Image (cartoon, rainbow, N blue to C red; front, side, top):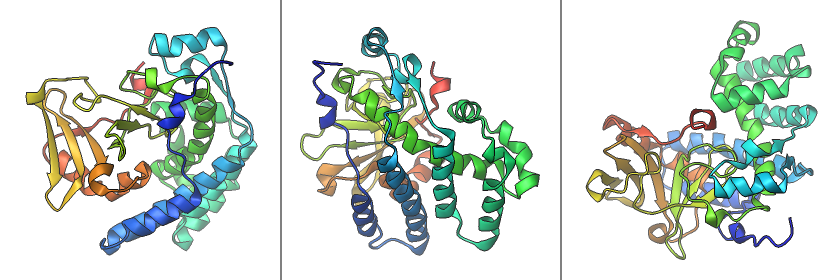
Length: 303
């Protein structure tokens, strides 16, 4: 679409494998062995996803101009108006790389190998699986537990993480056709999912939310609940550790939801939010002990 000013490029962060490895090394300093092991585990996943993203050549997303206008004007996620195309064979290749990344012991490695070589994967109905992932529905995976010795949650985890690079690639194409700065909603402008984590940008303090599925980033008011949109100061609070003021939890007493926020101004560096989500797991524990629940929610539960 001609004439579109890609202001969104000033919001969306571009992350390379080198960026991931450098940030992971930084975040491991002074951490417990448990956190280090967890960071190593997710580093393998994030690196596999980033490599896969760079190898996907097609845009994967199609939308006509009239539908594109509705995305911003009516607050409708782009994926609801356009079409995402994912090749099943390419997806299986990425799935193999994710399985390799998570296989930490021989038993799990053998189970995942059996899973990947099964007829169910060779004849994968990707559209059906994608629909299930968007709804958080793992019922279709429950019958696989006895066959492969894998829990449905494990299969869901690897298959969803293999899906992320394709959603990221489709989101890249969608963002190139719209101005994210015009998006005012509390859910992703591309796939419709709610955010899991946010940051206050180092240069200007802009609060940026990130989608956990397609990793699109967009600006959002600093003093506004990312779930119920409450703006009453008396019902919005922060939880943080005095020893780590660069990370906090924003909680809302109206809806009892919370959002983790990394403040780049205090941390004095640019962060990678998918890594920050792992680094700040203790904040999830603190918030949930106080009966708050995460904002994150699937697109199907919103629309």
